[in-house]
Image 1 (tube, rainbow, N blue to C red):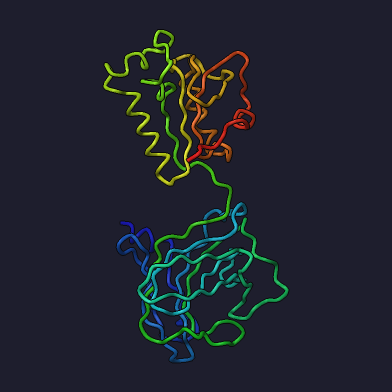
Image 2 (image 1 turned 60 degrees about the vertical axis):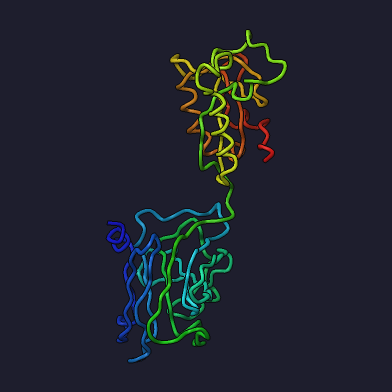
Length: 305
């Protein structure tokens, strides 16, 4: 149950820990986390929050500039909190953001703008936030901002904040989708092609139900999707052992063969290669080729679309 999984990770931390009577909860509703409840200023209270358990392994987002939230709120000002320490009551790094009532919005939170705070008091001498060690995440609604100042967008009573996503932004873009296509997809019907020199799939494209034509259509769908991608066009696939030197090319003109094992390894390597993002290329094995992945991608150009 997704709601049960959410509640295994997130739990309420409300002003009852200080004698207040506010209460909150978080659950999954329509593919968004719903942070809701009632906040009361009785008994010197006035805050509600939900917080993750300490992450089993601290999250390393050092390659990124910040986090972006996709939220729909109630017009109040909330706090997003990250922690570098595993201790429960340690320094919190906070960012306040206003919501628009009943409207979805994106909230960008630069790591450089996080304020070090301990129990709602700012710490001028604290170390800056360390994005390579995120131990816990928290959402809060409080009548206070920092250092005793009141939250100007706070109202006691019921509240609701929907959180659809939390994602990192500003990092090095890497492929999110890898497609294995085929060399030759642009050759059927190309003027000047000598079919006698082409592999069987090109010569027999029509007899094979337009297999290369449909693969090209698939490529176009991936390129138009908006998702970062790599499209690999292997030459004739073989069952031979991998570990061969390779040649990359663009323009869909090369012929040859390549091991399935080498294409599988290439797919793994592509995930960590920024130069492999939003590119389409052909690949074959060759005695004068390379096995250095970074060098292989150096001369590959990004797709023009």
